[in-house]
Each structure stands twice: as C-alpha cells, then as structure tokens.
Image (cartoon, rainbow, N blue to C red; front, side, top):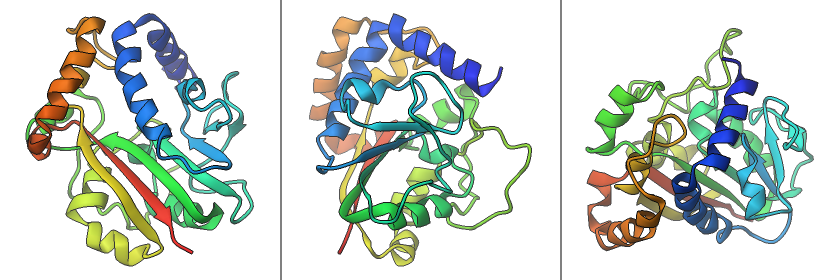
Length: 242
C-alpha cells in the first residue's frame, strides 16, 4: 500500500470511528494549549486532523493530499529562519530518518520563545510488548537517534523506530540537551494507559465504547503516579530560548 493510500485509509478511519475521535480530541486540545501566538507548522500532518482544533495551522507532509497545505520534509524545511512560533509533531518524530536534521531545522526556523510540541509513542513496561509484538513498527533501543546516518534511497515515509522519543527525552536526555542547549523542556508527560490500546488505534477494531473514553481518561489521571509503568505515549514541549 502506498503512503497516499495509507493516509486515505487513516482519514476514513478517523471519520468513521467515534472512539478514536473522542480519544484524540483530548490529546489535540492539550497540545493546542501549549501553542504560542503566531505561525504554527504541523509536520507529518497526515490526515489533517489538527486543523479541527487549530484552524490556522500550516499542515505539511512528505506526500501530497488534498487537505494538506504544503509538501515538506522535516529534515529540510522550505521556511525562512526565525519565522515560526510552533512546530507540532503528532506521531511523527519516530518516523523521521535523521532526527538530528529535524532538530537542526527546528532551531533554525523557530523564533525565540517558539515551541516544539511532540506527541509520540512511549516505551513503558506495559507498552513494550504491545508495540514490539502487535505493531508493525520496530522498537530499537540500540539505535542512537542523534547519530547522523546516510539517507536510504528505498526508505518509505512510514518506516520508523518507536523508541526514539523515549531515548531522546528520558534515557539519553543529557546527550540531547548537550546537543541542543537552546531547547528548554517545558512539559514532559507520560500518558495513555488504557483507553489508547483498547481503542485499537487506526489499525485494529476498538474494544472500547466511545462513552467509556472520558471515564477511563479520568482514571488514568488518578493513576498518573504509575505513568512510567503504564504509559503508551509521551508529550514533550520544548521552547527555544533567546
């Protein structure tokens, strides 16, 4: 299946699966709450869902679809320096071939005080077997996400390593901060304990009625002290210092 067909399929699932919309709506609202005034750029916009919550966002991806604004590679942004207030990546960071090239570009295009808002898979004790055995994307902790590697001509846009965010922002955060001292971490939250895996995501049938999403999210909030063991996702907000 081509990347365009995958995005079309995901957009159809988004429109037809209430439990998914209920769950993702809570996350989109939280991500939007961290945005600074000014131009917001979404990378890997995919199905274009963020526009429902931040209508002025410039939605990009590496493949063209009618609902996207710009075709752009996160590693080589066609944007002038210091002109962007926010960069949003929802389930995108772990798909970028050279993560370091993205952060180099982000530092270049963000204005002082601008933010990077990242939502990505989190590898916890509970999520690891699910991501490892029930998800097509690999979980590879042996890879250094900050090491530059030669581009692979046959690499597909959906190739990934789901461990990237966990390594960058937790296991190897000291190395990340040394590389990018101008990016201060403003938010670091582990989330998505039960509702997300039960929803089936975009690939599997849901085991959760949409009416159960909010009660489950409330339970997850109450059990927040167990996030390191139960979380399936991580939300990180980085701010560029002056």
